[in-house]
Length: 243
Image 1 (cartoon, rainbow, N blue to C red):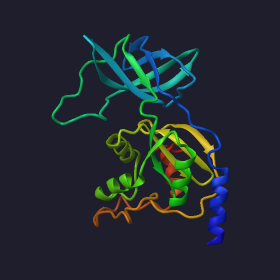
Image 2: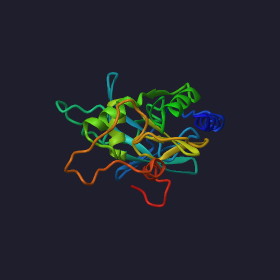
Image 3: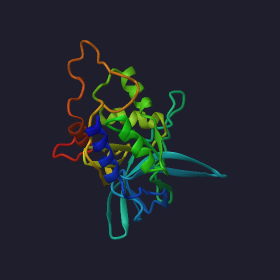
Image 4: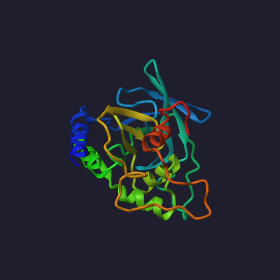
């Protein structure tokens, strides 16, 4: 027990010495071509940053018509890829059929004040929450409940995207051995990383109070993860093969 407490204190001593600050950035589409657009670049956005495209219908009425993801930055301009925005979708309402056009507003770093949190144990979960007081972290019980209900002990990118959408969250923070990473919850591209200490012990697939997440008896392709760090580095694309 003393050894575990010592390792945890070392993790805290190393963890997250820098602040996370990616404020919301508003700009307009300069031009649009074949599902992509160009905007003025900003140091507050990164490749992988995501947001929404707002269309003005006149008379003070506007609506989100698409999702935008930054794909590259060069010479003062940034390229964005358009995707369907389904975070607020309802079965009773149709998706907007208006395509993004020059002059539409783009809001990037959208919902970056809210984050899912994936931590290997309760102590590190608490440390991360204290290290970034400007972020509202969604309690991992909500993610654990989603995985338990859907019998998914091996969470994928799509699982986390759905959890983010259900909780109006733009970021995911994943704490691993030696490193903590903020990633965009849609693109899953790492945005900021922070050096940390060693992890003393793991709860799989991540810390929550939900308990064991079981799979269906006949599902032989979705077993529990065996290596926490390897699994989440894989999802983040930090290893050679991306999922």
